[in-house]
Structures are given as C-alpha cells and as structure tokens.
Amino acid sequence: MTKYLISFPSEAMVIPEGDFEAVVEASHAVIEEAKAAGVYVFGGGIDDEIDPVRVAGDGTVTEGTYQGHKVPNGGYTVLELPSREAALEWAAKIAVACRCPQELRQFGYDPAS
Image (cartoon, rainbow, N blue to C red; front, top):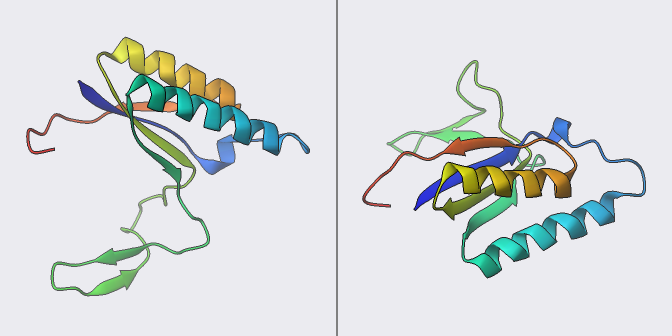
C-alpha cells in the first residue's frame, strides 16, 4: 500500500456565503468514509494564525520558511491506498466535498515508515 497526499491551497477554496457549514459537513463525511474504509492516515489544515519557523540541528530557531519557498497552507489528507487509481477516486470525492480541485502526490516508499 502506498501513502498519498491529497491537498489544496487555502485560496483555491472559494465558498459562497452561507455554504461553509455544508462544506464542513461534506468534507467530514468523506473523512469518515475513509476511516470506515481503513485508508485514512491523517488529515487537517495548516493554522494560518501561527507563523512558521525553521529549526536547525543545534536547536536554533529562525522565523519564516526557506528563502524563495512558498508557505504551505490549506487542507491536507493522507490516505494509504492500493493504487493511484484509488487515490484519484478519493481525491475526486474530496474535491466534491471541498468544492475545489485537489492536488495528488505520492509519497516515496520508505521501509522504516
């Protein structure tokens, strides 16, 4: 089984006024479906209220991200699935629920993870 990251940037999610609760309910329903199917690993959104920092090996903390790197934001879901085709199907379900296209990325295999 391979892990897949399904995500979207915050600015991609444009919800008409009054529809936010419906989107929340729809997205939670897809997550519950993934949990019931046994494919859910992790999901959540980046808290835009907290600024990112970089932490060096010696513990030094530096404000911000790597120079030239765009700050990740939005929503993320990690699923463990048997195929890319299955990942595409789940990404489509999440796209419908969140009302915006999703990016799909495959994690590289790491025998220790």
